[in-house]
Image (tube, rainbow, N blue to C red; front, side, top):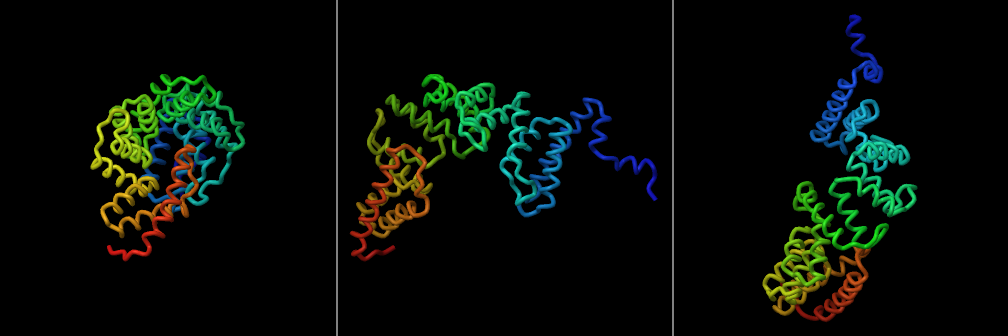
Length: 318
């Protein structure tokens, strides 16, 4: 039989939080959020639905009962973008309320998320890039800095200001390098393209090498291949970067490597590269890039199809 003290220990957690001091409530929120992150790191929540629910319940409690801002932001994200196979039900309006609540209380990532909702007009939020810029401007979160920089670069919602865009991209770069590591760094990519446009090839190379995306690697190869922006031509270095970009699935780089292998009389590798260009358009043909890049890619598709037809009469050996 349970003692009265044991029964009291089972009282509703929500009631317990009401009886706590402010400092105790803040500490409870920190503890609950830390426990949630530990559960997330130690379990495969996609496979373990039970633990996913425990994790999300701790996030919910830390956010709604204890007012923990990181938890409130994360709860907002989970309600808008559900994860873990239905362990939490989607609630777009509730998620937006959570994010706005955290953003209004100065949470940088929440401010970024709210700004992005306005930037793209997602989930019933009316698109307004001026409002988006306001949210981004109030946040020091690195992705806010990048998105605000992009608005200044394009003059969308704010006056076009390339110097301000560059300043914000440089600030955002530090965050991407710390948080993403060797992954995609859009701030470095934009800086690379900006310096290339003003014919500062060496600075462009510096940033493009940090960008971590196939298009940046392809541009690097082009700089070395054609000696762009004052950089000395280096065909060996160009081929190295074409190979890196091709390995990341860039169709233009695969096309260039096809030409390289063809010149080397390596018909097998040439055909293999041209086939990859065709496969790219069959599987990943929805190109979300600028019109010039799209035009080049469609030309590459036509070129690859015709090259395979021409090479098809030859005996292909590995």
